[in-house]
Length: 75
Image (tube, rainbow, N blue to C red; front, side, top):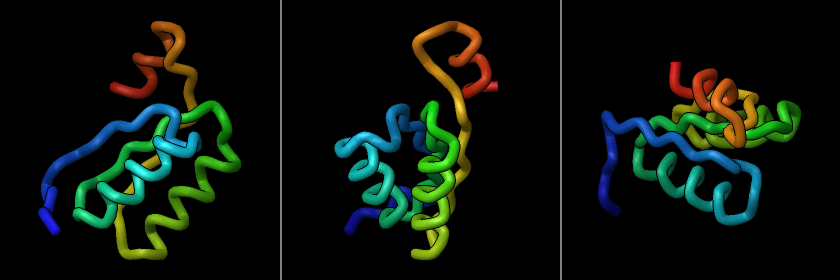
């Protein structure tokens, strides 16, 4: 399996089926996942799942449909 160590991956819609698949796959490849979603409770559950697999994750509760939400995610 290819390693993505030292890479940071931002995935919006991290709770949707395909988003969660990507998040877990990148975590398996040693990339740091920045998880973004509007649902804080479920977002923290996915972050906890990644950390329990010795992955690195950071979650941001935001709505990327607007500029302020995007700024909150990136800055």
